[in-house]
Length: 225
Ligand SMILES: [Zn+2]
Image (cartoon, rainbow, N blue to C red; front, side):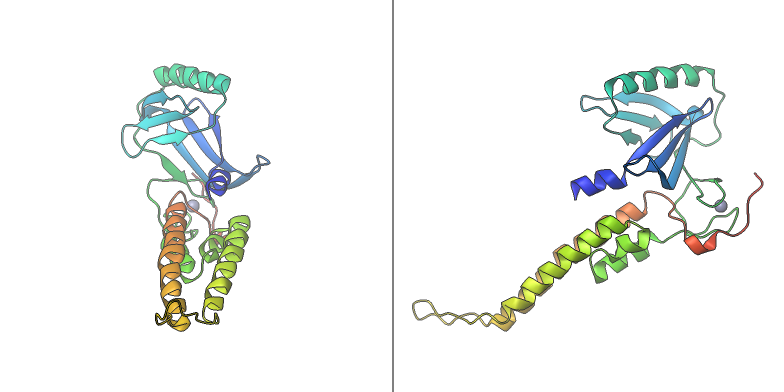
């Protein structure tokens, strides 16, 4: 799961004279759906850490953390940010903003419809509920097809193993009454549902709130601003 999380959360940083653009890319550096920005005037401080991370702290909202940046890039990013921030004006928004994938208007909160172009976004709650129904379905809905296939195959294998428990011949040890395999199967099924489905639901809903995933069919009007 850790590797997949890294692949899903790969970002390209683009620094302009007014903002830091944070663009989701795949392993071939091709742009994906999630885009966000931090206005330079919204940045309170930039911290760096031992493990190749740069933390951009905003005046409001949560800090944005970027890991795996090369040492030279990390230094250049901090120096350029420091220089540009000295020369930028005050910002009216002091937190990280998501950009609508339909019209690129900045939106501060996770929502299901763009207030500017009425383009729709996928619901993190729906993604979580789908994953609760069966692991992988929520990621399929969010468009993470590789991860979804991996999770569905894993869950099918686990459930196939669980149902086979019900057909194991009970064996008695030293005169003890053997456990009923059907009851064992039900107990195992409940544990699997709570932990495997429940955990995947939480992780998928969390990933669904990382940005605005566009509904492909809802690209409606274009926006003039
Ligand atoms: Zn929009």
